[in-house]
Image 1 (cartoon, one colour):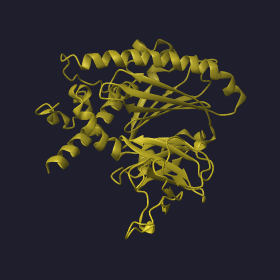
Image 2: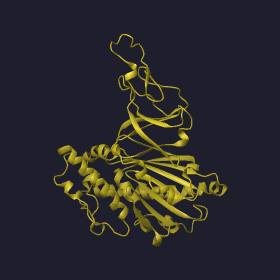
Image 3: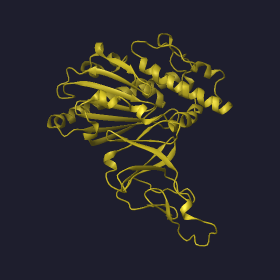
Length: 363
Protein backbone atom coordinates (compact mmCIF):
# COMPACT_ATOMS: atom_id res chain seq x y z
CA UNK A 1 0.00 0.00 0.00
CA UNK A 2 1.30 3.44 -0.92
CA UNK A 3 1.61 5.72 2.14
CA UNK A 4 -1.14 8.28 2.46
CA UNK A 5 -0.03 11.61 0.95
CA UNK A 6 0.91 14.16 3.58
CA UNK A 7 0.89 11.58 6.36
CA UNK A 8 4.38 12.44 7.51
CA UNK A 9 3.25 16.01 8.13
CA UNK A 10 1.40 14.60 11.14
CA UNK A 11 4.79 13.53 12.54
CA UNK A 12 5.86 17.05 13.40
CA UNK A 13 6.21 17.18 17.21
CA UNK A 14 3.56 18.88 19.31
CA UNK A 15 3.82 20.03 22.93
CA UNK A 16 2.14 17.66 25.35
CA UNK A 17 -0.72 20.00 26.18
CA UNK A 18 -1.59 20.28 22.47
CA UNK A 19 -0.69 16.76 21.39
CA UNK A 20 -2.66 14.35 19.23
CA UNK A 21 -2.30 10.59 19.06
CA UNK A 22 -0.43 8.93 16.21
CA UNK A 23 -2.36 8.76 12.94
CA UNK A 24 -4.38 5.55 12.46
CA UNK A 25 -2.59 4.77 9.18
CA UNK A 26 0.56 3.86 11.12
CA UNK A 27 -1.39 1.05 12.79
CA UNK A 28 -3.44 -0.25 9.89
CA UNK A 29 -1.19 0.03 6.79
CA UNK A 30 1.26 -2.82 6.16
CA UNK A 31 3.78 -0.39 4.60
CA UNK A 32 4.74 0.99 7.99
CA UNK A 33 5.83 -2.33 9.45
CA UNK A 34 8.53 -2.59 6.80
CA UNK A 35 9.64 0.93 7.67
CA UNK A 36 9.67 0.11 11.39
CA UNK A 37 11.77 -3.02 10.97
CA UNK A 38 14.61 -0.88 9.64
CA UNK A 39 13.99 2.49 11.27
CA UNK A 40 12.91 1.28 14.72
CA UNK A 41 13.85 -2.33 15.52
CA UNK A 42 17.14 -2.50 13.61
CA UNK A 43 18.27 0.77 15.25
CA UNK A 44 17.48 -0.03 18.86
CA UNK A 45 18.53 -2.35 21.66
CA UNK A 46 16.44 -5.51 21.86
CA UNK A 47 15.97 -7.83 24.81
CA UNK A 48 17.52 -11.06 23.54
CA UNK A 49 18.00 -13.43 26.48
CA UNK A 50 18.56 -13.82 30.20
CA UNK A 51 22.01 -14.43 31.61
CA UNK A 52 20.75 -17.72 33.01
CA UNK A 53 20.52 -19.01 29.44
CA UNK A 54 24.21 -18.20 28.89
CA UNK A 55 26.02 -19.42 31.98
CA UNK A 56 28.89 -21.45 30.49
CA UNK A 57 31.35 -21.18 27.63
CA UNK A 58 29.64 -22.24 24.42
CA UNK A 59 26.11 -21.63 25.69
CA UNK A 60 24.18 -19.90 22.94
CA UNK A 61 20.74 -18.50 22.18
CA UNK A 62 19.16 -17.87 18.80
CA UNK A 63 16.54 -15.31 17.88
CA UNK A 64 15.71 -12.56 15.46
CA UNK A 65 15.95 -8.79 15.49
CA UNK A 66 14.10 -6.77 12.87
CA UNK A 67 13.45 -10.02 11.04
CA UNK A 68 17.17 -10.88 10.91
CA UNK A 69 18.44 -14.16 12.46
CA UNK A 70 20.98 -13.70 15.25
CA UNK A 71 22.95 -15.86 17.67
CA UNK A 72 24.55 -14.85 21.00
CA UNK A 73 27.38 -16.97 22.43
CA UNK A 74 29.11 -17.06 25.82
CA UNK A 75 32.86 -16.88 25.25
CA UNK A 76 35.56 -18.84 27.12
CA UNK A 77 36.67 -15.60 28.84
CA UNK A 78 33.15 -15.04 30.19
CA UNK A 79 32.16 -12.31 27.76
CA UNK A 80 29.35 -12.42 25.22
CA UNK A 81 29.55 -12.17 21.45
CA UNK A 82 26.71 -11.78 18.99
CA UNK A 83 26.58 -12.57 15.30
CA UNK A 84 24.16 -12.87 12.44
CA UNK A 85 23.11 -16.52 12.51
CA UNK A 86 24.08 -16.84 8.85
CA UNK A 87 26.95 -18.93 7.49
CA UNK A 88 29.28 -17.09 5.10
CA UNK A 89 29.06 -19.98 2.63
CA UNK A 90 25.43 -20.11 1.48
CA UNK A 91 23.50 -18.52 4.34
CA UNK A 92 22.74 -21.63 6.36
CA UNK A 93 22.04 -21.38 10.11
CA UNK A 94 24.77 -21.96 12.66
CA UNK A 95 22.15 -23.08 15.17
CA UNK A 96 18.41 -23.64 14.95
CA UNK A 97 17.75 -23.68 18.69
CA UNK A 98 19.40 -22.66 21.95
CA UNK A 99 22.30 -24.85 23.04
CA UNK A 100 24.73 -25.57 25.83
CA UNK A 101 28.52 -25.67 26.04
CA UNK A 102 29.29 -25.93 22.35
CA UNK A 103 32.98 -25.93 21.47
CA UNK A 104 32.43 -24.59 17.96
CA UNK A 105 29.59 -23.37 15.76
CA UNK A 106 28.69 -25.71 12.90
CA UNK A 107 26.61 -24.61 9.94
CA UNK A 108 23.59 -26.90 9.74
CA UNK A 109 23.59 -26.74 5.93
CA UNK A 110 27.08 -27.78 4.77
CA UNK A 111 29.05 -28.19 7.98
CA UNK A 112 31.35 -25.17 7.86
CA UNK A 113 32.81 -24.71 11.34
CA UNK A 114 33.47 -21.47 13.22
CA UNK A 115 35.13 -20.73 16.53
CA UNK A 116 32.94 -19.35 19.30
CA UNK A 117 34.37 -15.96 18.39
CA UNK A 118 33.04 -16.20 14.84
CA UNK A 119 36.24 -17.03 12.93
CA UNK A 120 35.92 -19.69 10.22
CA UNK A 121 38.02 -22.68 11.28
CA UNK A 122 37.14 -25.36 8.73
CA UNK A 123 35.27 -25.46 5.42
CA UNK A 124 34.30 -28.95 4.34
CA UNK A 125 35.82 -30.20 1.08
CA UNK A 126 36.96 -26.76 -0.10
CA UNK A 127 40.51 -27.87 -0.93
CA UNK A 128 39.97 -27.26 -4.65
CA UNK A 129 38.83 -23.65 -4.24
CA UNK A 130 41.53 -21.30 -5.51
CA UNK A 131 42.37 -18.13 -3.55
CA UNK A 132 40.12 -19.26 -0.70
CA UNK A 133 41.55 -18.06 2.63
CA UNK A 134 39.83 -19.32 5.75
CA UNK A 135 41.58 -16.67 7.84
CA UNK A 136 39.73 -13.92 5.95
CA UNK A 137 36.25 -15.24 6.72
CA UNK A 138 34.38 -14.51 9.91
CA UNK A 139 30.80 -13.96 11.00
CA UNK A 140 29.50 -10.38 11.03
CA UNK A 141 29.10 -9.15 14.59
CA UNK A 142 26.18 -7.51 16.34
CA UNK A 143 26.46 -5.51 19.56
CA UNK A 144 25.68 -7.28 22.85
CA UNK A 145 25.41 -5.94 26.39
CA UNK A 146 24.63 -7.68 29.67
CA UNK A 147 22.76 -5.67 32.31
CA UNK A 148 21.05 -6.74 35.55
CA UNK A 149 20.89 -10.35 34.40
CA UNK A 150 19.35 -9.42 31.05
CA UNK A 151 21.07 -9.63 27.67
CA UNK A 152 20.43 -6.97 25.03
CA UNK A 153 21.56 -6.90 21.40
CA UNK A 154 21.59 -4.32 18.62
CA UNK A 155 22.11 -4.86 14.90
CA UNK A 156 23.28 -1.40 14.02
CA UNK A 157 25.76 1.17 15.15
CA UNK A 158 22.87 3.59 14.73
CA UNK A 159 21.40 2.32 18.01
CA UNK A 160 21.93 4.81 20.85
CA UNK A 161 24.66 4.10 23.42
CA UNK A 162 23.41 1.34 25.70
CA UNK A 163 24.29 3.21 28.88
CA UNK A 164 22.07 6.05 27.71
CA UNK A 165 19.19 3.65 27.12
CA UNK A 166 19.12 2.18 30.65
CA UNK A 167 20.95 4.89 32.59
CA UNK A 168 19.44 5.53 36.03
CA UNK A 169 17.16 2.49 36.23
CA UNK A 170 19.40 0.41 38.49
CA UNK A 171 19.89 3.33 40.86
CA UNK A 172 16.17 4.12 41.00
CA UNK A 173 15.05 0.60 41.94
CA UNK A 174 17.87 0.00 44.48
CA UNK A 175 18.22 -2.06 46.62
CA UNK A 176 16.36 -4.38 44.23
CA UNK A 177 18.83 -6.52 42.28
CA UNK A 178 17.17 -7.90 39.16
CA UNK A 179 20.10 -10.20 38.45
CA UNK A 180 19.36 -12.12 41.66
CA UNK A 181 15.95 -13.25 40.37
CA UNK A 182 15.45 -16.66 38.78
CA UNK A 183 13.36 -17.56 35.76
CA UNK A 184 9.99 -19.16 36.57
CA UNK A 185 7.92 -19.30 33.37
CA UNK A 186 7.11 -17.77 30.00
CA UNK A 187 3.65 -16.95 28.67
CA UNK A 188 3.22 -15.99 25.02
CA UNK A 189 0.13 -14.37 23.55
CA UNK A 190 -0.74 -13.71 19.90
CA UNK A 191 -2.96 -10.65 19.82
CA UNK A 192 -4.98 -9.25 16.93
CA UNK A 193 -3.57 -5.74 17.10
CA UNK A 194 -0.64 -3.80 15.76
CA UNK A 195 2.34 -3.98 18.12
CA UNK A 196 2.10 -0.25 18.84
CA UNK A 197 -1.46 -0.59 20.13
CA UNK A 198 -0.21 -2.88 22.87
CA UNK A 199 2.66 -0.54 23.73
CA UNK A 200 0.36 2.50 23.81
CA UNK A 201 -1.94 0.65 26.19
CA UNK A 202 0.93 -0.21 28.54
CA UNK A 203 2.11 3.38 28.66
CA UNK A 204 -0.83 4.93 30.45
CA UNK A 205 -2.77 4.31 33.62
CA UNK A 206 -5.70 6.33 32.29
CA UNK A 207 -7.59 3.12 31.48
CA UNK A 208 -7.05 1.46 34.87
CA UNK A 209 -10.44 2.35 36.44
CA UNK A 210 -12.30 1.24 33.32
CA UNK A 211 -10.41 -1.86 32.10
CA UNK A 212 -8.66 -3.21 35.21
CA UNK A 213 -10.92 -2.93 38.27
CA UNK A 214 -8.83 -5.48 40.17
CA UNK A 215 -5.51 -3.81 39.41
CA UNK A 216 -6.98 -0.39 40.15
CA UNK A 217 -7.61 -1.55 43.72
CA UNK A 218 -3.96 -2.56 44.10
CA UNK A 219 -2.38 0.57 42.58
CA UNK A 220 -2.94 4.01 44.05
CA UNK A 221 -4.43 5.83 41.05
CA UNK A 222 -4.21 9.23 42.76
CA UNK A 223 -0.47 8.77 43.32
CA UNK A 224 0.15 7.04 39.96
CA UNK A 225 2.67 9.08 37.99
CA UNK A 226 4.78 8.89 34.84
CA UNK A 227 8.37 10.08 34.45
CA UNK A 228 9.99 10.57 31.05
CA UNK A 229 13.62 9.98 30.13
CA UNK A 230 15.39 10.00 26.79
CA UNK A 231 14.88 6.35 25.83
CA UNK A 232 12.54 5.06 28.50
CA UNK A 233 9.64 6.04 30.70
CA UNK A 234 8.63 4.97 34.19
CA UNK A 235 5.13 4.55 35.58
CA UNK A 236 5.23 4.31 39.34
CA UNK A 237 2.69 3.66 42.06
CA UNK A 238 2.64 2.59 45.70
CA UNK A 239 1.02 -0.82 46.24
CA UNK A 240 -1.99 -1.26 48.49
CA UNK A 241 -4.77 -3.77 49.31
CA UNK A 242 -2.84 -6.66 47.77
CA UNK A 243 -2.37 -9.23 50.50
CA UNK A 244 -1.04 -12.42 48.98
CA UNK A 245 -0.32 -10.90 45.54
CA UNK A 246 2.53 -8.37 45.42
CA UNK A 247 3.45 -7.66 49.03
CA UNK A 248 4.43 -4.29 50.45
CA UNK A 249 6.31 -1.68 48.47
CA UNK A 250 6.09 0.01 45.10
CA UNK A 251 5.34 -1.00 41.54
CA UNK A 252 7.78 0.17 38.86
CA UNK A 253 6.61 -0.16 35.27
CA UNK A 254 9.49 0.65 32.94
CA UNK A 255 9.13 0.93 29.19
CA UNK A 256 12.38 0.84 27.20
CA UNK A 257 11.98 2.01 23.62
CA UNK A 258 10.77 0.57 21.37
CA UNK A 259 9.20 -2.66 22.70
CA UNK A 260 10.51 -3.74 26.11
CA UNK A 261 8.72 -3.60 29.44
CA UNK A 262 10.25 -4.26 32.85
CA UNK A 263 7.51 -4.66 35.45
CA UNK A 264 9.06 -4.72 38.90
CA UNK A 265 7.21 -5.46 42.13
CA UNK A 266 8.63 -6.71 45.45
CA UNK A 267 10.60 -9.89 44.74
CA UNK A 268 9.46 -10.15 41.13
CA UNK A 269 10.50 -9.06 37.65
CA UNK A 270 8.21 -9.54 34.68
CA UNK A 271 9.75 -8.73 31.30
CA UNK A 272 7.57 -8.19 28.23
CA UNK A 273 8.75 -8.25 24.64
CA UNK A 274 6.30 -6.94 22.06
CA UNK A 275 7.08 -8.36 18.63
CA UNK A 276 5.22 -7.55 15.42
CA UNK A 277 3.62 -10.57 13.75
CA UNK A 278 2.36 -8.87 10.63
CA UNK A 279 1.03 -5.34 10.69
CA UNK A 280 -2.21 -6.24 12.47
CA UNK A 281 -1.01 -8.87 14.96
CA UNK A 282 1.71 -9.03 17.58
CA UNK A 283 3.33 -11.56 19.87
CA UNK A 284 3.70 -10.63 23.53
CA UNK A 285 6.20 -12.65 25.56
CA UNK A 286 5.96 -12.49 29.34
CA UNK A 287 8.91 -13.88 31.28
CA UNK A 288 8.56 -14.13 35.06
CA UNK A 289 11.51 -14.02 37.48
CA UNK A 290 11.38 -14.27 41.28
CA UNK A 291 13.72 -14.11 44.24
CA UNK A 292 14.15 -17.16 46.46
CA UNK A 293 12.61 -15.38 49.43
CA UNK A 294 10.02 -17.74 51.04
CA UNK A 295 7.40 -14.98 51.31
CA UNK A 296 7.75 -14.23 47.60
CA UNK A 297 7.58 -17.92 46.67
CA UNK A 298 4.36 -18.25 48.66
CA UNK A 299 2.75 -15.50 46.57
CA UNK A 300 3.58 -16.84 43.11
CA UNK A 301 0.37 -18.74 42.41
CA UNK A 302 -1.86 -15.83 43.40
CA UNK A 303 0.31 -13.32 41.54
CA UNK A 304 0.28 -15.37 38.35
CA UNK A 305 -3.50 -15.80 38.42
CA UNK A 306 -3.84 -12.04 38.92
CA UNK A 307 -1.47 -11.33 36.01
CA UNK A 308 -3.44 -13.68 33.75
CA UNK A 309 -6.61 -11.73 34.59
CA UNK A 310 -4.93 -8.42 33.70
CA UNK A 311 -3.59 -9.78 30.41
CA UNK A 312 -7.03 -11.01 29.36
CA UNK A 313 -8.42 -7.53 29.99
CA UNK A 314 -5.60 -5.86 28.04
CA UNK A 315 -5.92 -8.26 25.11
CA UNK A 316 -9.63 -7.60 24.80
CA UNK A 317 -9.34 -3.82 24.81
CA UNK A 318 -6.33 -3.78 22.46
CA UNK A 319 -8.11 -5.92 19.90
CA UNK A 320 -11.12 -3.62 20.03
CA UNK A 321 -8.85 -0.58 19.60
CA UNK A 322 -7.25 -2.15 16.52
CA UNK A 323 -10.71 -2.61 15.02
CA UNK A 324 -11.43 1.05 15.70
CA UNK A 325 -8.17 2.18 14.11
CA UNK A 326 -8.91 0.07 11.03
CA UNK A 327 -12.49 1.33 10.72
CA UNK A 328 -11.64 4.40 8.65
CA UNK A 329 -13.77 6.49 11.01
CA UNK A 330 -11.07 7.50 13.49
CA UNK A 331 -9.20 10.79 13.36
CA UNK A 332 -6.23 11.12 15.71
CA UNK A 333 -7.60 12.26 19.06
CA UNK A 334 -6.15 14.57 21.71
CA UNK A 335 -3.96 13.08 24.41
CA UNK A 336 -4.55 13.61 28.12
CA UNK A 337 -1.54 15.65 29.34
CA UNK A 338 -1.79 14.30 32.89
CA UNK A 339 -2.30 10.62 32.11
CA UNK A 340 -0.85 10.00 28.63
CA UNK A 341 2.59 11.59 28.68
CA UNK A 342 4.16 8.15 28.24
CA UNK A 343 2.14 7.61 25.06
CA UNK A 344 3.21 11.05 23.79
CA UNK A 345 6.87 10.25 24.55
CA UNK A 346 6.78 6.88 22.73
CA UNK A 347 4.89 8.21 19.75
CA UNK A 348 7.29 11.13 19.38
CA UNK A 349 10.21 8.70 19.23
CA UNK A 350 8.35 6.84 16.50
CA UNK A 351 7.59 10.06 14.65
CA UNK A 352 11.28 10.95 14.68
CA UNK A 353 12.13 7.49 13.31
CA UNK A 354 9.57 7.82 10.50
CA UNK A 355 10.84 11.26 9.53
CA UNK A 356 14.46 10.08 9.58
CA UNK A 357 13.59 7.10 7.39
CA UNK A 358 11.82 9.37 4.92
CA UNK A 359 14.78 11.77 4.81
CA UNK A 360 17.19 8.92 4.15
CA UNK A 361 14.93 7.47 1.46
CA UNK A 362 14.52 10.76 -0.42
CA UNK A 363 17.76 12.55 0.39
